Image (cartoon, rainbow, N blue to C red; front, side, top):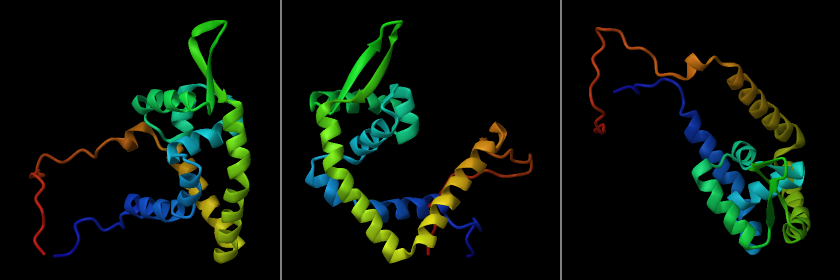
Amino acid sequence: MPPRITYRNLPQLLLKARDRLMSNFRPTLNRFGVTEQQWRILRALDEYEQLEPREICEMCQILSPSMAGVLARMEDLGLIRRNRLPEDQRRVMVRLADKGDKLIAEIAPLIDARYHEMEQAFGKKVFDDLFKALENFIDADLQLPASAKQPPVLGSDTEVTPAKRRKD
């Protein structure tokens, strides 16, 4: 039986590529006792100095319900500081604590060295093209109307059957 979906499974391919990419960095993060989520947050704060939790969620692709716990653990570890804004006590800003800043200073050269090794292995052009292709994909996706993200409307003559495991 031919496949029912003719397009390749892009989400699965991207997940596989992400996992392969992260396998280059996990040993370094593990050596310093930093999770991938924590590292994404540390990098964002290093780049932007201070952010609101909702901004961190968006930039770091971390779901909001998880964010409070992750930030609390990072604060307990002394990696970040959270402060309420004096003009609006409902808003919280997150920034690096001294320990978080020192940790990034230790890890950054190792991460840069790994990127350099990968760039040498794949070639600068391949690396640059990959960044550009991913950025273009994200930009194009942001331009799609909201209706494009909704499930397609099935015709009245389309029969919907429950999913079953295929027999090979």
